[in-house]
Image 1 (cartoon, rainbow, N blue to C red):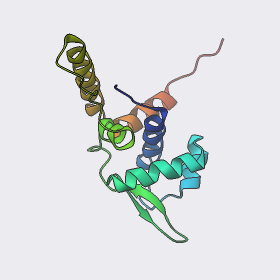
Image 2 (cartoon, helix red, strand yellow):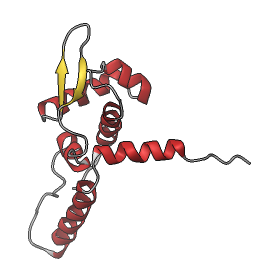
Image 3 (cartoon, rainbow, N blue to C red):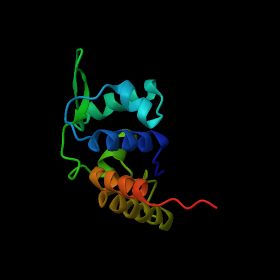
Length: 136
């Protein structure tokens, strides 16, 4: 079955936090967790997975933390999702019409996620924060 979990959503939010920073030094997990409202234990697990996938690099010590290993303009949301949740392709049980429907749905979702980068997410967040608020 096709699955994109909250874990992928949280990972993308955290990566957007790292990508949106002007400085390029490593950022402690606790700082990202507090700024984005992500439980620290969950973020530690996600960052560990993303580090093993080659998305993040870590640095130990007093000035330690995590930073992006790749340019956020080249890192797609699909790569993030598949690093966390695995491939989007549904399990095949045969060659029936139902399998083709799920395969088509998975490919459309994959293409949509492939078309958006982490840099795009940062840009969308910035636009949303700059949008005027109307109160009644």
